[in-house]
Length: 328
Image (cartoon, rainbow, N blue to C red):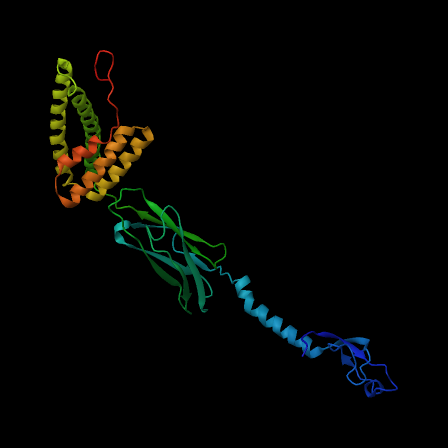
């Protein structure tokens, strides 16, 4: 059966020998293009229009159009609004409630498509993303939705926001949700900053002193009668390292009283600042110190010999001497 609404029809003109020709029968051209009785070639007669096939096509296309119309041309409502332009929520509340109002067509069922969209706040990090359909029943004029907020009160950062949009409402109105950060105790931030700054400088000093002690020790071991000023420098460096080591341990113990998350963020910020300023030695020493401190905060086990050994490997220098035999 052909599904074409217009078909070509053919006839056989072998009147003398073919019953089909004498009966003036019309055929749709066969695969062999020949008469089924006399095998003579068929000749074109006319175009035939099938009303049944055409109606079937019209019915099929109309049904397809009706089914696909909502997809390609979704219905847009004009009577749905947010109760306000912006909602502020404290991060510690963990949930934000947003309300929609319906102003007309209250007797109808209306399904509103709603989606969240990132702003400075990111889905899955700061809030739970939504992509839902909210249905107004006859008589309902107000609907509320709850969106979970993901607290990160151990992170010191600015307020953040995201958007709620109505996909099938004319103009796609949006609503701003402002997450007011709980933040952290300002005093803890200041104490962490001071501690990290002191430890960073101390780690860099220790790295330099340990390398200097190594160079002086190697050089003096090759001299039977080393110069007095070099011996004095060696002993002074030993004293400096001992004092710095004691202070290093004291500061590590003070870190136990601070918030570890605040401390970790402060360390990261300090390292970023050192990197931008290209303070290479202090950056490397602080990186080593950070690993030592975080390990100490979790284990509470002091290991100053190992700490000094690691800091001593930060500075890479070669032993050099001038013409007078002094270390340079």
